[in-house]
Length: 303
Image (cartoon, rainbow, N blue to C red; front, side, top):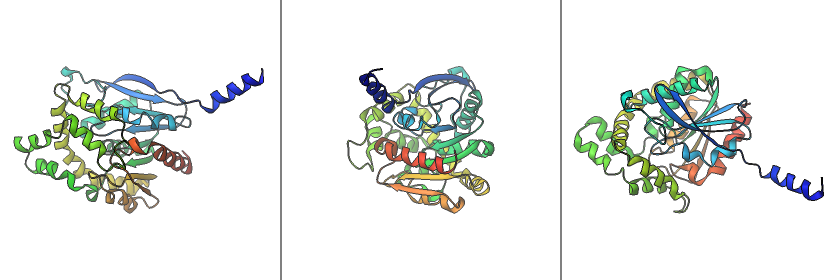
């Protein structure tokens, strides 16, 4: 081997980036699309996205974790590229989504995993944790709420819809489910307008525009009340299990506000809370910082 060959090999090793694979699997009568990277025998980190996103939001985070973990990020039913057959008669509730993702973990034979939960991923993941506490090694909550005090004033139109599910209140929410609404949702609270890659909200808007998808999202907004009703049970699970928790939060989030992050310390005595100058979609603007915090936290917990 010549010195130049050795230098080239060293360069390739230094800049080796884990390849993210795009896969599909049948679970609960649903064809689930998911992204996966890392050693199949490594400890699993399961990334659960929220509204209006998909596993695409983790495109930069996955390779930062995959040197140490088997990283798996599914698209929830109603989002991304997961396909729900029309004849499946799927009813879009958070109980149903959690049931499907539970079946997904069984289909992949995931015996244990650390959860990363964001937005809708929090009530989905916490349902999994309550059903299988022995499987969950840790929880990283990135603006993933489980406390009443974490609901910001931006929930006011949705709260009205919960108390009065009229066509008028449903249509008031519908008006925000546009391409401009998605751009605004991503940009609010961000340190600058260039912090968010435009393909993120553009993809979400395109998928939202598919026939029938807006109605799915409106159904889920209505059913989010079921998550609030479960908050005490989520909290009881955490108090009993003392599962390791890292709450890393965009402190400018208007949907899930910082008191929701601090509240984790009430139920998990060693919970770590980190507030970052970002918005709801923190991994869009602070991927490197979030990834570093996750790796340090999981290593500290022996995972």
